[in-house]
Length: 223
Image (tube, rainbow, N blue to C red; front, side):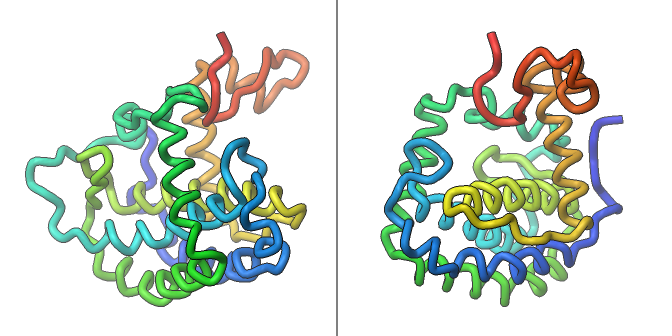
């Protein structure tokens, strides 16, 4: 059976993550480094922060598209990423650099703007989740996924970009509860296998003595 989290997700976990990440987004260390390069080469700390809070903003926006367009097929998580142009593209390809550049530009409002986006999204998120239907439309891929799968995608993005931001300013990753991190990590494992093949992902996760190299879910694929 393809990976799905339908019917298994704690739908309040994303809201708790937003509350937990507010101190990081508003940290003075983030403000001081706003225009510097982040842990992601070519992207500023501000761009990473804006990308992080954008995950909550997108959740509110996309959950509010009711009903999803009738033409949009409902797809699995793996199919969602198959439709995503940046997933297998090199990190320096336009599909990826355009995302970096867009969020660097959106960060021009400074830390205060990102703090405000996060606060607004945090306030609106519970009602958006409560009102969501069984499926959620993803405009970028012109398809729908189960709402629980959509929330796990957002959770995974939140976990990854929270770590990016914390690492960029040498702060610890805030504690995020298991209801958010466990599904996010499961999705990352499956995406790693899609990128690198099951043996490579398996050995990277389970058998360091047989690992053949990096198996990151995102980033360049070994040749």
